[in-house]
Length: 291
Image: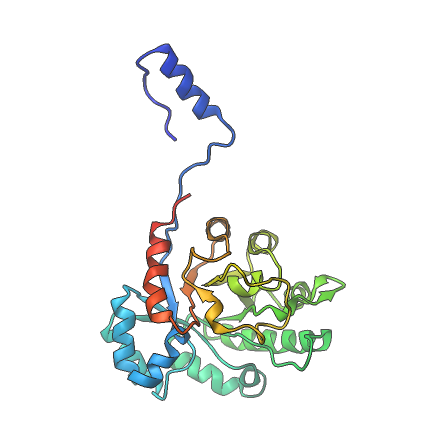
């Protein structure tokens, strides 16, 4: 709020000064970042309608940045050409954990062929509860992958999925994973949904690790979903993804904290059967969000 240059009278002056000095008066702000899309949100459309038609749909949303989860049967060059025709840019992509662990050289080749800035993993293969052994194995795999990508100017990331919050001597196994992975080689993508679902606080997470998160997935959750489950969503229906701003997640607080932490890229990810209808509504919500 700017302090007025002059006032029409003493009463107005006193009121304005009172408002100016009130500690709870928050400065106005808004969500200013580029809004991207994780193309997995339209996996059914890619399968049913093909790549060109589905990318036309993405363009119609006003999207320019995308995150990949495969190229739907196309080789990298023609897929990139289809993106370019629609002024779409692939920023990042997900690859399976088993490939990062056992096929690293070929993954790196694919990453370079797709001209990505970031490449990462969204699920750590494990049986039963996530364990310290799985955590250590993942840290070793991620450090090695991150070092291999760094030689080519690409950054590795791990995408949270909710099962990592089993207790450990460091607090949770997610804290342990952060401690074991090298900051120069391993970044993180916060999927807000999969932070909230296991009962964690995204704002506190961003404040605790302000330099480790570089990417963010935006998705909202039905208000009646119970929190505190550590199964990584195995028991949760995809229909629990709802339009941003209509669910139980406090996106005003989260996005304020995310902008303060310097998140570089934001991707809507809507896994619901209604994603085609919900994505435009979510974009409208983000563009109108103010605090």
